[in-house]
Image (tube, rainbow, N blue to C red; front, top):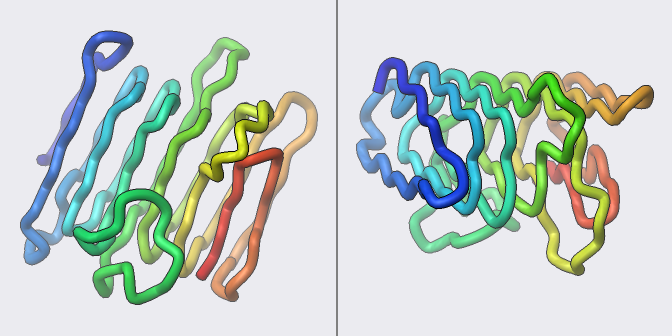
Length: 166
């Protein structure tokens, strides 16, 4: 897919499985207003995702082996050389924008997320990768910024939200 705009929202669920690992890109530029109880599983890389609201048990799994359903916990659960170029989760109004959902790829270039859901449910959600070049989480007046993440670590955490490098 080259460009795609998805007017997703309550009652309009997406469940997309892009299975060609030999393609250079599964998705080049995708703009999603509301990604709610929806899923993308891509066998090849995604260049750019811009999401307004990313919530309620949604997932974007890029280059994750087919047997994984949730957050990968080891590097062998990633297909080699599959990445996300950039992910932005942001919208102009101040409401929870990233809630109880998952993003996973072996390598992520840039992540920019705003307003993580701080309510603890006991179920981990967030981002898992082997490498992240640039990470920013905006939370009102405070923010977290990290660059060049490539060692195994928890790079950011708030309540059940984690950014985990394997």
